[in-house]
Image (cartoon, rainbow, N blue to C red):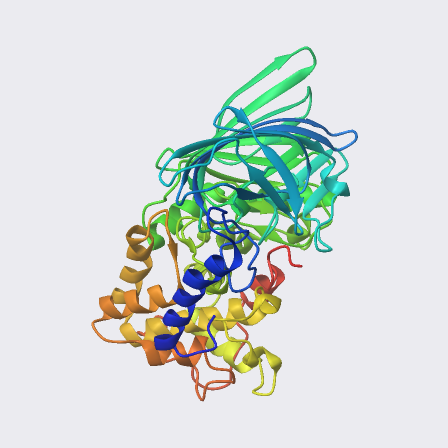
Length: 500
């Protein structure tokens, strides 16, 4: 994700984070963005969120949402004013039990002025009461809220929370969550983590969900509708909760045959990537017309279109791999997206290897040969693709080739040690591409900057495909044969997220 060589990119990025917010606001006011190089106004400065408590009421018939968000945080500087990212109509804000004034600014900023100034390191409790119709709210020409015939779904990247809860909307500020949703009887409300209770009274049912591990805002999801719920456990006893809209039609069977393998796939991924970092898994398939999936934490979102041609375990492998690469270890900024997508695509190549449908080395060699040197594919740098190419095919496919190149360079033993230990070393944290490059080099016992510069940061097709690590993953010789998994993986979708 970086146009400059690795040694200089760290300095440039550090400078951006130290200088941009300070120059953007006056003393005592939290910055209206974290200074992300792709989305400068996303997130906010001046505080760190610990927990979101969301108490919602949703009416599927007219898409009306009412909510009270209680946010606990700590001020990281003296504050006379701070911002939240939000797009619905706010009726009241309280800060530390006192009414605060608030105003709108920018495209999605809620400016809050507390009755009393906040001091650095002071605990802060913010209560926001709000309402609106999410499907009718557009910000910067986008609306990731997905209306369904029987409800609505919040699942979008790089933004999605503005349409249903106020937040510090950037992956660098993770928090835990309690999501409580009141819906009409006969309708289910699905979110992340574990279901604590579901209680019906006077024609309404309240579903209470808890995410006890740090979670980024874009990975927080909500789905309301009429679902068939299927529960299971993994071999290790981890609860599995999956849901399927009752009106999926012809896609229902293939969806269940795919997402229904979540426990099996997770058990396999645990063997490859190390201990699973969360307390639940599963997935849901709502009746939406979209074509993307999203690694919403513990409960990935899948569009029915993924299953239109039959069972598709590869998309489940991809989204569940993100639980380690993207959810557990999240991007420090959005330019680090290769840490999410290159790894999830390579997980599919490893699944193909396991299933005997083509080794990772064969897929890397075929991908390398598939795109001619003059194809624009090779002009996108996975290490710094730019906001306009954040979900470009090169981030996925060339990004996966970079990992095969690493495997060939260091050998299988060191390579899989890196895959397993990286999430542990950065558990529930955030990382940059440079962090991974340095980490891999430490475990390999030698610098690997040149390898990653070639595959991630240099425009143009490298002179040769990556070398092989061993006989099992050996690069093929002779004419390239299309691996049996190739079309299946491409069918999964080169861009598996909501894009602008």
